[in-house]
Amino acid sequence: EQPFHAGELAVQHQAGTLQNAHELGVHMIRTRISPSELPLLQSLPHIFAASVAPLSRSDGTPIVWASALFGSPGFVAVTGDMRSLTIHARPALGDPLAENLTPQAPIAVLAIDFSSRSRYRVNGKIAKDMDAKTVCLDVVEAFGNCPKYIAARTALPHKQECDSAEKRDFNSLAAPFKPRINDVATLRKEDVALIHGADTFFLATAHPDRGADLSHRGGRPGFVRISADHSEILWADYAGNGMFQSLGNIEVTGAAGVVFVDWDSGSTLHITGRASIEWRDSNSLQMDSCSRVVRLQVESSIFVPRRVPISYRLPANGPSPYSMPLSGEGVQADAKVAESVVAYARLVSIRDEAEGIKSFVLCPESGDETLLQHIWGHCPGEYVTLRLPATSGHAGLVRTWTISTAPAALLGESGPGCFAITVKRKRGGSGSTFLHDKLQVGGVLEVLTVGGGCGMSSFASWQVPSGKNPLVPQFSFRGDEILMLSAGIGITPMMSNLRAFARLRGNVRSMTGTQVRLPRITLVHATRSVEEVPFLKELLALREFGVLAGLVLAISRVASIENTKFRQSEVTVSLGRITTAMLEDALPQDRSVSVFMCGPGGFMEACSCMLTELGIPATSIHSESFSF
Image (spheres, rainbow, N blue to C red):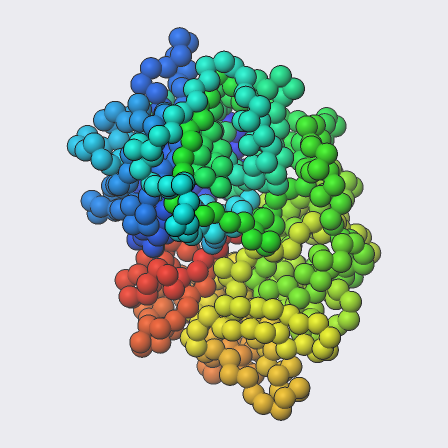
């Protein structure tokens, strides 16, 4: 069954993501909420929503709004066999959501934990039997999204000073705050300041048959531009999973709404208007090195003052490592200064790892000292964001890959040391095609950021001191038992962790004469054939040396298994996909384990369900998709 409507297909076709989007949609989009998402939904003090006004414009175009709801953790509940969602809160005074809550009207919500960069989208319809104190929706489709572009804010209870006159409460309806409604098609001065400083907003769109949708947009402050007359906002559409639900809806209806949040108070700025997609080729002025720009003509805006009892803070490492450098039209002067913080790395070698998979070893040569230090002592599992040279045929193409090597700091290397990315050739993938076919030893790439990905790190803490060589960082593990589940190129963050474990054990032994006690680690990897398993010889060596306590290969091609000869002590080989029985054998009896998963969406959804059946709590499951 086709998971996408004509508008989504049209945008996918123009962007060249048709096949990949179809594969993702079939595996990711579900008609009920996944049980593995319950801890996320139940832990949040906020949730964001998209709704459609009962009356459309005179030409039939829908009026779409984005909104925000706040409450004590637990105010979002899942009921009805995972097919219903109840939010125990009502819209604040002035929030347009309040007027759009009619039975069976389209609604969409986005649950997002900023600190872990986890997000989950639920699209549906307003329930028929909703009461006056809640927002209830019947689920039509639900799916997760990748961690890209999410600023890792912490959301903590606000500490109320005893002598403070300011009172904060989730119930804004009872507070003396009046919304500012602006029916003029231009933004106020204070609204412009909020938008210019924003690193996050939420985009609401709708389709006449498929209903509403809400997505997250993030970038460096200033990534949302405003026209000189304040009548239009525009932003570059950064690379994502290629399914284009938001842009597909805009393609059909030409309408959208956005909401910006003042993270100091929880106040919100809501804007609705007509939207359009502008496609730019490499010969025209691109925005942030992107070929797609979305424009939203302001028709109406509402500012809703709030004083929610939450303190949102953005730590020093909170900005997303994926965020694109700002370039092209409308870049603010202070944003241009920040773009000088880059480094340069030269390709020193290329290694074939498996069919269609290569590792590219890069050595930083110059650039920002803080960034070079971060590369040298990066946390296992982190990503690096690179800008490819203009000779790639895609001027300024920016891509992010997981660092597959252990930190150079552990290898006894002076200076920034070298690092590697391991890339699978992707049909139609501009970045992977350039690396595999055109990049040669000696070529230079621009390093923009390093970070993120620590959700896939087996280390609960990681800090590299200076002045010692080789180094033993200050670290702690995420548990005594670790299960790694990977498929295809999803093995790369696992390798970064395993290589760090191996080097760490050697460093501790050489410096202190003692043996570091590693967690008991089992790796289960799904693949079509043995020939497609990256790092196979190294995995067997890690198994032999005791870094891996168990190695399991789930191989789907019979012929590949028939030609496979492993010693039984090295690896367990099974025919077919990963099964519940296979996972049960890999788990400790007391189920006290930290699980790390990386692979296609369908693979991780299936594994999550099996782990839930086996009694593994969702809080012990850490996942990351490479489908973006």
